[in-house]
Image (cartoon, rainbow, N blue to C red; front, side, top):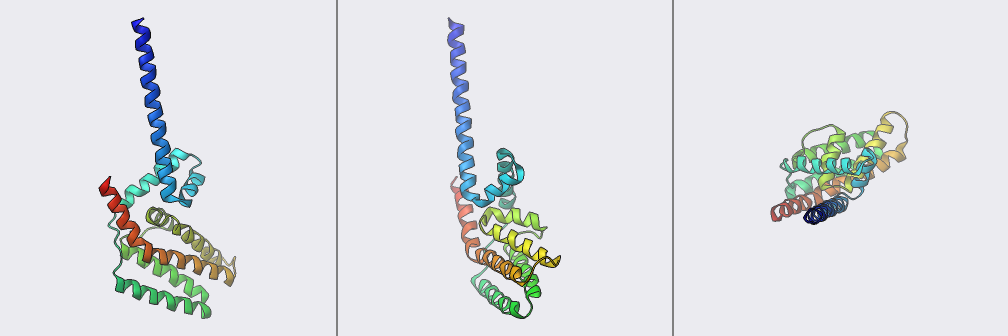
Length: 190
């Protein structure tokens, strides 16, 4: 009878542990989905496995946490906004050059904020931690600009690329400082 009670106790403990693991995994999934938004779905699509996608998203977060991401000073942000306005005006006369300049300006902003110079895919991954919604704009702008470089699109596609680049640019200048500060504060509280 004691062996039966012991067996029942072991089964109950294992069931409780399994339930705790299940609840923890569901909570982690919900937190990642909430934080990363559409980027969570993009990762799921790429990995075809929820656990692998979530591990990749957590690894991105760890990599970004090691970086010293910093907001730009107000005067610098104003200067960059003025440069962006000039780029938009340039688009009318030379859309191809304006798109190249837009990408260069974004790369410069990323570097000034503390993101490392990296290949496009790595930049997207790092950006997705603090800019999960805007990173979709970056992907689309990059795709449209690549199509144009291969001669597969028209000026309307470049206009769309410019709109996508602008969405990321604005997010970097406005949300970037708040997102990073909030992320660091949240980590300290935990």
